[in-house]
Image (cartoon, rainbow, N blue to C red; front, side):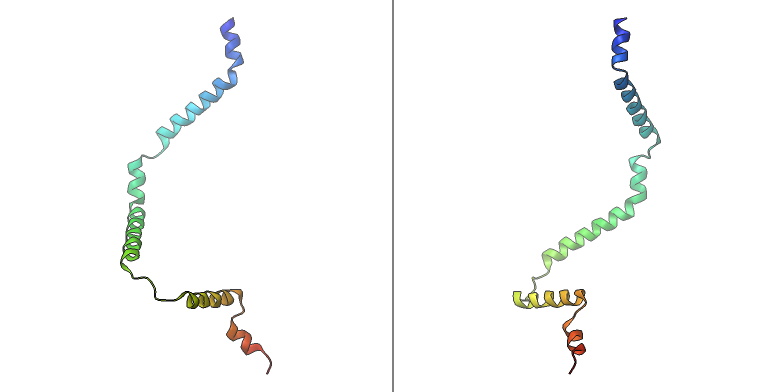
Amino acid sequence: MEIQEKIIHYKYHIIFTFIISLIFVAIIFLAPSFVTILAYFWPLFLSTALFLVAVVFFGKTSSPGTETESSGDKAVEGLLDYVAGQPEQVVENLKPE
């Protein structure tokens, strides 16, 4: 009788463990193998690897830009003005004379 009381006391633990075990077994038998996934996605993996190699190659071989900080700041400000919808040229053209 003592064993049945312990089983009843731990019934939720047993049910939870049984459900997790069933899910684990179902995943193992129903899921595709790693080779199948690799065979399906190999073009994506290859193109991503080639792109990363190109980025590293061009990052190491290209020379740094010759722009000074002030000209870079002006370019950024101009881009921000354009994105904000108020580029200087448009604002100057709209001013009454």
